[in-house]
Length: 101
Image (cartoon, rainbow, N blue to C red; front, side, top):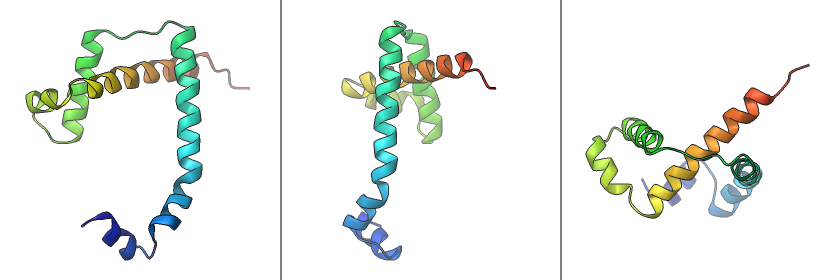
């Protein structure tokens, strides 16, 4: 099923769908900026082992063989995985530092 057929099935169109996603997309982008700032301020880095673990996790999520999935994870895709792991570590840091009243 292509995207337009999906939209038709749910009674929507591209413009309405884009508008409905606007708030979520804005929130995600803002969160990424916050996490990126924490990554930079705290000098968060990742090891090759952490990247490997994330690739294995994603391969399992998508029911892919690890070796096949690794072949897809080259160049910019690998950079994305690296940044994603850094952002998760930043989020964990923020959560562990948060104080609940």
